Length: 292
Image (cartoon, rainbow, N blue to C red; front, side, top):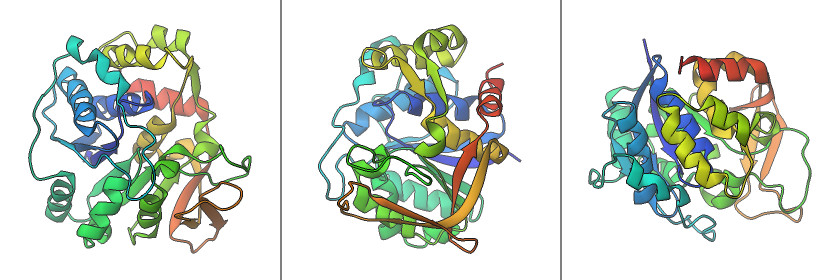
């Protein structure tokens, strides 16, 4: 049976969100039930998500979510990749009622069957668990691209972006009593990089074409794509691409003196699983296979 997934994303800032969404749409083993967007210009982000859904020929519900962090300052107010929207068909209006009502109703309809994939700041996720606390236990799993879980440089500027953008929300997300709470962090995702020239060569067919168009906006500042979010997506279907370790992650709502938000302690009986190693060759094979 296809894996049922709801995606929460800040598509439109870094390009890896679009790379991950394209994978979910192209993967025959994925039943993508809906997409919710988070962070500044959430409607523009929803338009980008809908453009990829339409390019895939899929009628997937898309819901603009919360734009402002719970308490932290706004770090990504703009969805710069929306500059390509005039070249790709997309929705201009979206369902009413908000993303969390949609997620709660969907999860209650299929208890124990849905994976919630979070690849942006966790503002929507935190609000979901506060407004609908029963949903945490009704999920099959919560998969997060966020945090660090191994040796890493310490000091300000080394925080992982999705946690940094809303640490108060991340603290709520990591304290939620979900059945399987799995994360991939910078320790492993930074090993999955592709230069712009290789991206332009490989993103030439089908659903990867609009992703490449969005990537050209990203390449105006960056010259390499790091496959942070796609790794979290691929691990839902192919957890063997990573080695996971059980433990306990605690997110501090305020940074400590070293500028880090997350504390991780390995613990065989801990409530969380974190990727501590990745096989890059296996990951890229699994990722590009769905587009063949």
